[in-house]
Amino acid sequence: GEDVEQSLFLSVREGDSSVINCTYTDSSSTYLYWYKQEPGAGLQLLTYIFSNMDMKQDQRLTVLLNKKDKHLSLRIADTQTGDSAIYFCAESPGGYNKLIFGAGTRLAVHP
Amino acid sequence: GAGVSQTPSNKVTEKGKYVELRCDPISGHTALYWYRQSLGQGPEFLIYFQGTGAADDSGLPNDRFFAVRPEGSVSTLKIQRTERGDSAVYLCASRVASGTYEQYFGPGTRLTVT
Image (cartoon, rainbow over all chains, first blue to last red; front, side, top):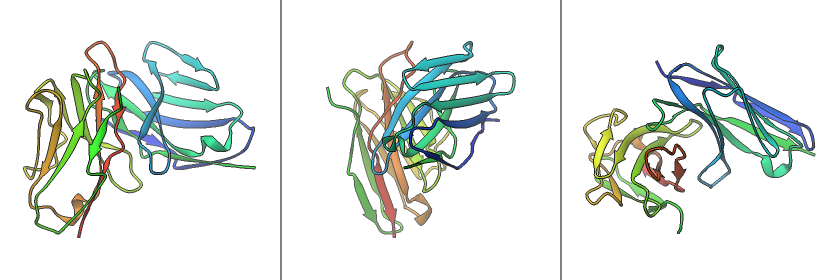
């Protein structure tokens, strides 16, 4: 079956690193994604990783993929108040088709 | 050049009524997706169009839900005999073509069934 699970809430101090974790079930997922949703705004694609990669870095964002354990993580370095949002992990069974989303992790950044 | 647009942004309807939700994808995007997001949940897939045809409609919850994309651009999601449980934000996304994976989302239509 297809299922994506995330912890629901994370609180960090401004300037610290944030790590958001996700587990997925479908081993056929070609790409795995991280989306960001701010209040009243649409979903914004942050980054994605191809399933044959272990790590992808994009400025302050680092994605780690453990395919054996079906575990994905998003690390945000030097977290800022503007990073406060809900972060969704998503898998894409078969690549082009539907995205299966987790319930989202609410990141709260405090001074 | 604009992003995905959806109209209306908010829709309030009475139980049992019919509603139509519209999505305008990014120009030139051949793939179009509908998702539904309930409060506190992640988006849930409904249907995927490649061009004019529905390539995957496995997420439509029942036969009250129907979507069309007659000219391969704008899409309309139609809900008959609305129920209170249909209240959610309906999201549309588009993707440019095969060989690319990024889906770009619109702001959504918030549907409230009273």
